[in-house]
Length: 315
Image 1 (cartoon, helix red, strand yellow):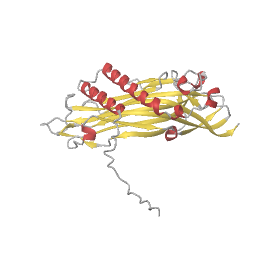
Image 2: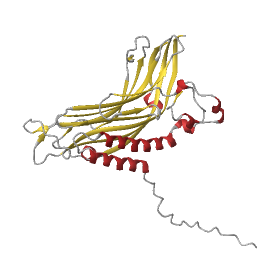
Image 3: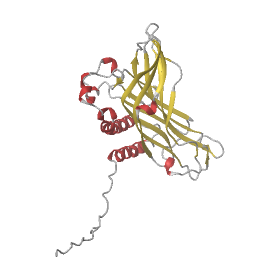
Image 4: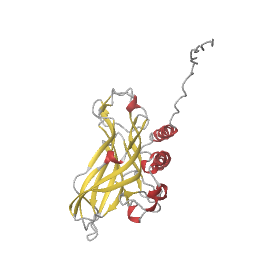
């Protein structure tokens, strides 16, 4: 008689501690650079060269992160290699990174601009924007803007086009106020947004591009109005950094366009700082960069823009 085999009980060995998820080195790099920038902001009106150095360091990091995360870079197939999509636009220096071959000149970013104030910067070749704003105690509101755009010429007499930029942002801001033992009053606020808009070119008159129709503004960050005398929350009192990535569909904006005309479809990075801080008896405070730091910045990469016809009203 064969002896029946007995099934042994499974042995559950202790698995040990799960492997720790690594800290994003890109985030740490941005935080380190933000602290360097904050130290420089103690000067009366931060040195432009220091802001420019910060912009370059953080832009390099954001571009590096974007190259590994862009959905267009991850969706290339062999059949795509033979033609460039009409609706796809890329930075002037980055065309070969998508596997389509060299795109037509019309599918490269064409325009880059700023509001002409301070250290804001935009570059159509690299597809980057840097918006910067800083206020002193003697300045109630400051704003910085940087924009990128493409040239678009409709093929139909009247149509609706959907503009979809892909934007990755690294934000740094601070609203630090400490004049102790002097008592103060007032509020502070720092905020930033992305704006999608359409302008019509006028080659005959040579006038600046004219804004067409409505535009769309998407908030990126906002401290909201905070009491400068009592609010010591770390999210405004300390140096703060955060990252926001917007896929193309998140910023999709429709515009009505006409044939026979040329438009600029663009995205703008805008940052603002606002305050009304005074002494408790209402006097303007002498600026001291070690006691008052109110600034905001956005470094943005725009790896792709899409311009897709949604509806043709008149062919």
